[in-house]
Image (cartoon, rainbow, N blue to C red; front, side, top):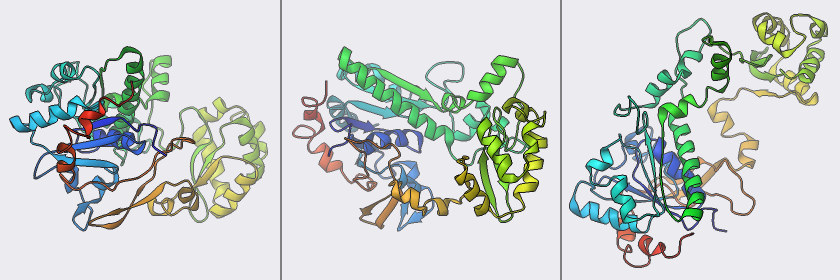
Length: 392
């Protein structure tokens, strides 16, 4: 069955992670994503280690389900080829610094005049407007400037960067939401629009608890280490043989946890009566609970919490979670065949749809693999003529 976005043609002019991730989300759900790359070098992510038979594994993860064409956008011929693709495209995505597309002669005004139904998505470090618009941005920079690093890490330690590229992934997700909203708006107006976000704003969007703290109190949120700003107990604990998570801030969960740990007296302790009390006295509470949890191995506590319907789980390493039977059952490890690497394993599609499910259909493309296929059909049965058939 075709995916939900079958019939949409997307031009992916992006590189690295944020833009390609956005385009991948659309491709997973059926859009025809044409990745436009520099001849000879392509997307810089192609050279990120580790490598499998010469192919960059990170590039392969977030560029599946796409076709690749090699076009020199600085040449007249390359610009002409792209503009022909624009004629039949629904969406164009780019993640250059603001102004870069204008300098190429391919800015929003040019593209919108050429195809008024085109929706253009842009990701930059700081956005298309504002005092910092001209600055270059990376995930590291946005994590630091958004406040994320100031609240991450040990309570008495230095600021800490999340070891995942959370700004890049979040920007890709936010832009995908915006692009789909623009497609829906186009059903009513018949016109495309510019959609943009930034790494900084995407990182900032995660400060839901911290923004509430600042707006309500006017004070700077402290770094809490493992603790949660609004719920307790709600963190990782060490057991006799490892680590588990315990999410028992809700009152009924808290009372059941005290029964399991054989400390029923804590329920009536004035320091821990309500969730707000427990948050205020979290350090003392954690020390008391930790003493009990060290007495038994992880599986003992996980079984007891399961029986009492208390949320919690093991802390798994990445190789463990990718082999976990639940993850496999949910289709979060997918396979396809790649001409260089053979069977290629990648992450599955996290959003499940009953009627038009997303899927991993194509391996990540080799540089320029589909240039002849795409550009050779642009005046025939390919993307240009798709404009006649795409959704209103």
